[in-house]
Length: 217
Image (tube, rainbow, N blue to C red):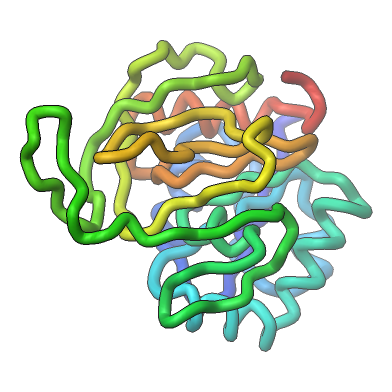
């Protein structure tokens, strides 16, 4: 069965590019909404996000998307894909905006890169980390199928996720430090990079998400 996908709309994501990429990847139907019934009726859920975490968390709470996401993940146990700030919002706390409490669905912190990151050659690296970078899968997972180690994905971020449990890290990147590019835990997969901006590799990952049952690794 070709799945129906709901993209959670709390006003802080590049929603239409995500929806368009999912349609191109083969979704039967993609709806962009914050209405609980619409999201709960979908087969898959995508939780995107761009912008400052304080504004994101305010909108998530105001629209009840925090409770909705908890229902989808932990009660209905639908496959969920979180992207960029959507991934960061899952953590316990972020250093951004002077410190912001997040959803605490995954214990851990969201840390600033700092202003003194350097490459292996000693060159100063700009923050935000913006552009194409190599992602190294560090666990076998359905969403990595057909994606070779060292494939490049598109990033835009000044903060990076540091989960308490290192075992949930599904992929890493290097940018003056080794950071968490992806997280996998049960029916959740989350990426710091943007699959919808990552051309062929991103579409492959989205296709894998569409035929992932939320359990197989």
